[in-house]
Length: 150
Ligand code: HEC
Image (tube, rainbow, N blue to C red; front, top):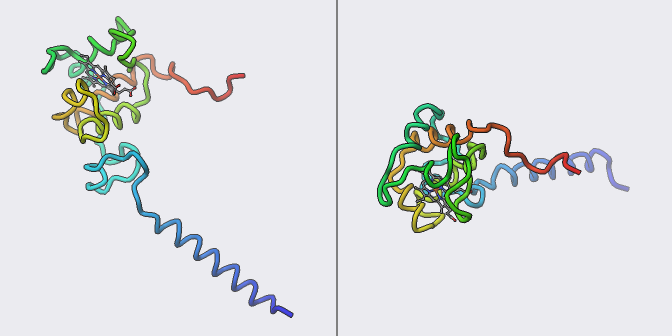
């Protein structure tokens, strides 16, 4: 006959083990950039300063090397919302976190694209946060996932 308090003890012990296993999985989520991981960032875009959309607008409209084009010339902005061509993603209304995370990945070499890697290589965390806030603020909320769509 098994002693019920022994069973209770066993249940508590396995719960404690399960909790330890969770808190022990200190690996960064998949897809986090290496520089980010080295800084101890373990969740999407964590550690970025707050973005300033007005500063981001200015930045997004400034022509930059190597192609001497501004972000908005390729990706579209508030006036001309569609990107320059079908391989260039539209950023207006895109989630702040997604934009910031993509730029961190290009900058840190975890996502590569001949054009964008160059665009992003010298961006500061503040510039990334600002430009992400700006594109997110255009048509904010228009980009939706498919929840609730039948
Ligand atoms: C000359 C055109 C051009 C310029 C200028 C440009 N981009 Fe891009 N951008 C692209 C293309 C093309 C892609 C798709 C690359 C890929 O497939 O990885 C892209 C991808 C991106 C993505 C990823 C979007 C996604 O859906 O995954 C972000 C974010 C981004 N660009 C932000 C910027 C910002 C911010 C600037 C200005 C600093 C900028 N881009 C300047 C052409 C451009």
